[in-house]
Every structure is written in C-alpha cells, then in structure tokens.
Image (tube, rainbow, N blue to C red):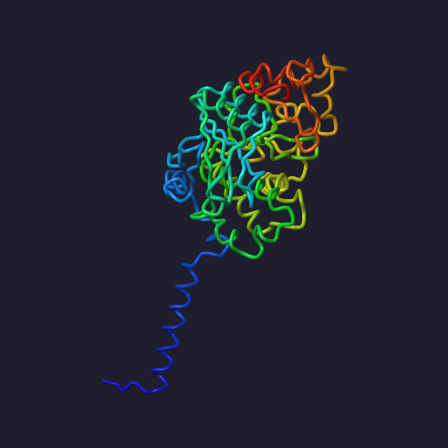
Length: 362
C-alpha cells in the first residue's frame, strides 16, 4: 500500500473543500428569492396572522378577536389606518361607513372586512362611530376587526423590512405610507379585493379578479386592487411586496402607493404605456379604464358636491362599478342629508342605513 504524503493529503483536502463549495453554491437560493418565498400552499397563507391570538385586541365595543381563517377570493377589504399610531380613539365617519355598507349591499355573497389598525391595545369609540358600526353590523356579510399593527407583519416577507432602518421608521408620512403598504400585504396574505374608504360601490364586484384601474391614460391608481389566490394573483402579490422591500422611499409621499403597482405592471407587462397594459400582455392581469372606478377625475371632484351640471355628472357615472370622491380634497366639504347633490343621492341609494342614520350632515 502506497504511503500518503503530506503533499497528497493537502491536495485531497483541497479537492473535497472545492467540491463541497460547488455543492453549496448550487443549492443555495439568491437572497432576493429567499425574501419572497414561492407560494406552494395557499391555505397556509390564509391563516398566517389570524391563528395568533396576540394579533387582535378586545375592546369595549368591538369584542370579536380576529380568529377566523380567510379563504377563497370572495373577500373585500377596507383598511382604517388614520388612527394607526399613538391615538386611542377610533373615529369612523359616515362617508367611510357608506363605503363599507355599499360594498356589502351590492355584494351579498362576498364577505366585507373593515380592518382597524392601531398600535394601542385599548381603544375608545366615539358615539358617532358606535352608531355607524351599529348600522354596518346589521349586515351579515360585514366583519369589523381591530388589529395589532406590529404582529400583522409577522410570518410574512415584510417582517425584516418592518424592523429595519429602511422600513416604516424612515417614513416622513408614516400613516399614509402604512396605508399604502398594508393594502399590498393584506392581499398577499388573504387575496380578494382591496378598496379605499372614500368610494361608493354601485355594482357587484364578484366576477372581478386580478385587476386594477387606471386613473388616467398615463397613471395607474391603487384605490382598488384585486389579487386572486391562484398563479396570476400570487405572482403580482409577491412582486408588489418585493417592490416595496427593495425600493421603499420614506421621503416621497406618493412613491409607495400607486407607484408600487405601476412599476410592477411595467416590469411584468414589459411596457411603460398604460394603454398597452392589456390582459394578454400582462399574463392575464387586467387594467380597467378610469370609467370603471374613477369616472370623475380628482381635479373635478367638486362635481359630486354641486347641483350644477348634475345631469352630466350622473350620466358620466352611470356605468361605473363605483365612484371615488377623492377624500384628500373633498373631506372638508359638508353635505346636508337630503341634499340633491350627486354624492348625496348616490349615498341614499347605495348606503341607505348609514346615510339616513348619520344625523344632519353626511
């Protein structure tokens, strides 16, 4: 038997080390892939947050914890984030209540969730809020939940981002940016349709899936987003979270909302032109025209509050799924209940319980 020399021994060690290194490299995934794991078991996604009892708080008014498992795509989500940080009173105004009621009324076979996010364990509810919630809870397909903000990110690809210096603590507009981020995270967790709280739903949304709506010929909005639980919806949900994790900007107010879905569409559809973002080009994902959910542009929001040109306004929204009243601009414009302005008449028809039980002002 030939004696192994020290030189030969070292060569053997180096060969083994080299082969081991190649095997390790061949089997490790890039960091980007590890951050957004492939979605193989959708049922696991549906229970991530809701199986943990610390994720929801009991309150003097809304005592139901978030424990149910959300499955399927027939869910509509509204997110109340205006009192997300360092406030212990929830104020749900009549227009927000109207949005939730209209969704439930026009979609009786879908479950409508209002998620109230906050960092506080104990919340108080104003008398106005209690009255609005009373009207909403008369619908069997509405559920209202108070959710812990921090635990909502657990067991998701965004948990590290949430705790990082590049995460929410870098934001100059924390509340606004959390509203942006939470809509994408919610649809990643559960699938279904996200809606802003300044809409009134006029038609059933049940057949809509994997869609957004253009705000204009050059902009895609994020006020309504639908992702299903199958391949197309999961691909877009993953891509949107990855976009936030890698490109979040705390110094830009609008970058993390419509910008996220717009940049995602540009990559997947391989075009920068909104009109070219067709279902065929976008792997089955649909970009609906502005007339579907934004029939009145934000610059013309006063049309909903004026009696002048009412006929033209009502004609322009006739075939839309919803109206969007652009709360950022219109929130301080009061409407007397019983008024003949377009917004009042639409509310009376599509959210009658909230509208007729909110006092003198809507």
